[in-house]
Length: 180
Image (cartoon, rainbow, N blue to C red; front, side):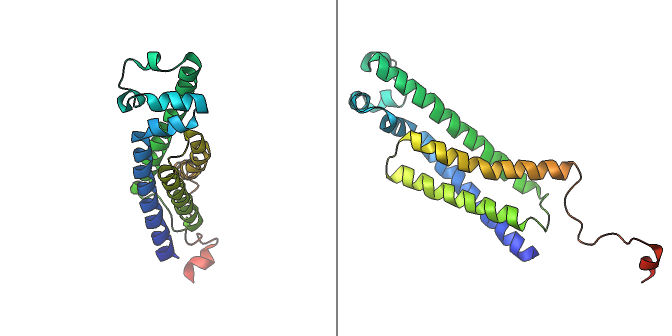
């Protein structure tokens, strides 16, 4: 069982690292995904903007979009960037937690589901990148990517409170059992 847990932990670590790399890639192309989330009339206005203005380095963004489009852009941008930054922070915290080595031999299911959810996140983000999808799709990916972090947080709290790691053999109950 220990070997299986080690394999699950390694798969979880690798899938979380790959998940982090793809989230950072999505973060660098965030403006393209924000444009896809805008209403069609605003999307047309945003696509007419120079690429530098879409990435936020242009001071004249307020002149290039109508007021309603600018508000839609800002709302979508704030939400999307916040979700991406929270995802990056959670995955980094989870990776650091895995590197501490406080996992017990009885955490197979925790590591398996963590690896599975990170792999699903990698797949979902790859589809988002390849399809140049809307940033509104990321809400679902964000919710799913928080689950491994929350499970890791719960596991760490249980370790620090003394509930885990599980003892492999229970202590003897009587002095007669000590002699055997």
